[in-house]
Length: 332
Image (tube, rainbow, N blue to C red; front, side, top):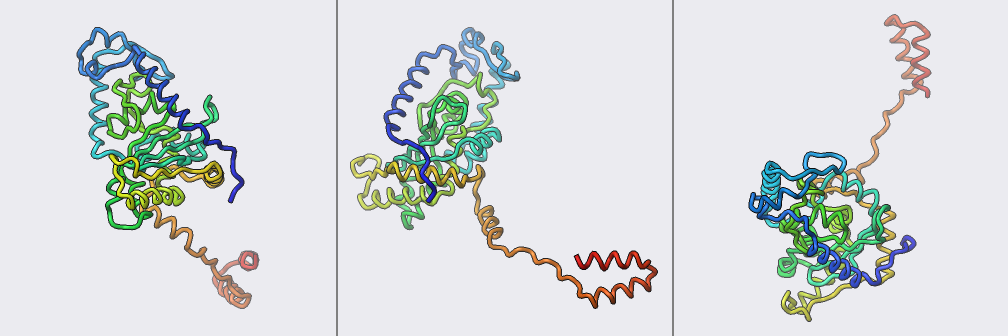
């Protein structure tokens, strides 16, 4: 087991509560929100004083036009066309931008499930190098948890299936709040405060879906046997107690100790996973690549065989210098 890294999980619940209260208060007092009714042209007098970055580079802003509202509506319709019944970890990774994937791969080293209760999981990740924070909280709701409790199979089998099934998510970072929270609300994948204001400044094109912290969590949900086993403990207990969303006292709470969290964080940092979609085909290819024997080197000709070949080459008109060069190359 690698040496535990310095990663403190204490106070995470209290910290998340304070951050959510701050975020809600900030949203309640915002006076530059582009509301849903304004996007369809109502209350244009107040909408036209707002600004957008649509079509501009380097964070430049300009006043919103009626043509912008048409473009915003098209972007929303395009986004809604992707919605079926929520999103999976694979889909979150697939829909994310290359920039966010690269940031997650290079800057976010671990995602630790601090607490779990009835399919509701609170993860902690490290913050990026330029962040004022030291850690971030990612909230995951396994939307298929009830299905996993009922489906035939072992708790571990159910844990693996629902970890790759439909889910909701939220992150306390500003990038999620201002760039992606509106998108997750539209796509019915939001596990936190819903956002009804269009991201006219930070993401008017509605590109991507997840920040670098969420992407690290999705990668671990897709492939971590440690996390699957912890979810399986929760499932096994909830099955035994016939727990439900309404009967909260019967729900099993699974928590990590400080030592478990530090060891897991150290292990994840030491052997980081790729930020990529995991499929059965990809897994099979990886397995074949690991187990396939190395390619065999071609067998060298013997000295007698080389001399016989030289005689044949001499008869064909090759010079002695050319023949000796071929024999020397064979002996290397």
